[in-house]
Image (cartoon, rainbow, N blue to C red; front, side):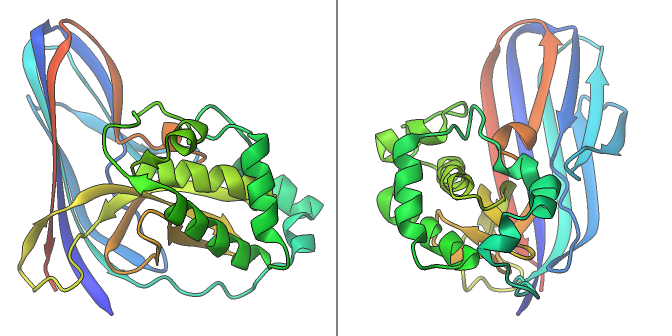
Length: 280
């Protein structure tokens, strides 16, 4: 099954007093691979700015823009059209010896590291090792993802954008970012290279052509078990035509959709909407 989707992601800021200058980076452009084809993409800002594009270390397309005219509001609109389908099965399935080989450790070592969002935790590592028993690396990815899905309750407001995997696990609640971080922490604890994926999820499985739905900014994981492949622990589903991927990295810190610095009043309101339309 193949879908063609239009994604419109709008972010609006309002400031208490005029901002005199701001410097920003947007990671909002979907990428192309063997599951997804980017057909068109554009980024607009109000007030208008000039931007330049580059590809960062992790392979994400970044739009960088700055604004020096005083303003009390800023709106960023990212629009794209992509074709998506189900992800292909990795051609090779690695053994534990393959995953732990010097070549794999050298090539994918950055996706085995622990950090602020994905900290090392003895209890989580013990659970991950118990889930791994008798399973291949690929089977372990599924077992841990399903354990996270069954253990966590999806709940907004319990965690924040800076919460770690351990914070979410101890709370027992969180959002897709937390599900992804917790899964990454456990996979890395047993030596499976794993990375964070940001993107969008079309929320209606049987959407009609031409129908627009309120979509979601979403996050899931990809693991290397002979090839990179993804799984969505929040919904306990494989990656397929409803998923639109934008960026990959070690954790949320590498892929945050918008970040920057500015000089001026505090932001009094931030509005984010995602509209997704099935075109075909």
